[in-house]
Amino acid sequence: ALKATGLQTSDPRLRDCMCQMHRMVQESSSGGLLDRDLFQKCVSSNIVLLTQAFRKKFVIPDFEEFTGHVDRIFEDCKELTGGKVAAYIPQLAKSNPDLWGVSLCTVDGQRHSVGHTKIPFCLQSCVKPLTYAISISTLGTDYVHKFVGKEPSGLRYNKLSLNEEGIPHNPMVNAGAIVVSSLIK
Picture 1 (cartoon, rainbow, N blue to C red):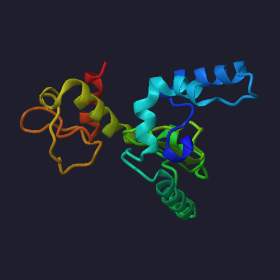
Picture 2: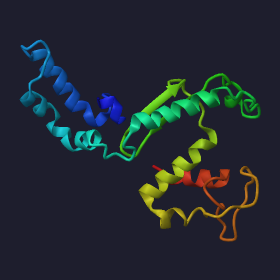
Picture 3: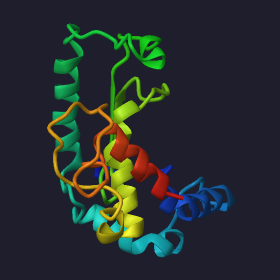
Picture 4: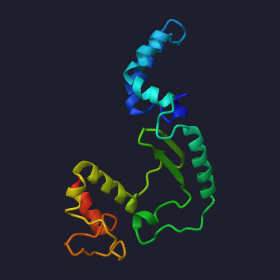
């Protein structure tokens, strides 16, 4: 039932709950079954999270239906093999073009993975929006934008250029991404 909500037993927020439940099942004299009181004792530290999950109060209420759509899109896209691995970046040139995976995690911690999701890969420019989001979240918009702009440059992503204020045009060009990553501790 927990998996249907998008939560997983490995969710760090549920660690204590899962350990306590496992311990109680082992100590139980009723063949591994928990009565209502023991169950309540196990879940009491996570009652708000679990209540939200089972009452479908997460950002994606019907997570099984949603992941069904994701899985179908994954299968459809798996057949698209017309692209080529970038040869101009050594780390990418070594990549296996047959690997394909999708993982997602919602703001509520609902998680789903399909395909080759356990194999490490090189993020390259995919990390730019993540570092920008982290910097904005930890330092604030005003502070970050003292060092990097937020407008398009009209130039290639790897062109080293600055705007009229003497800062990189935005965090998605290489110069801006370098500046933003230097702000994160």
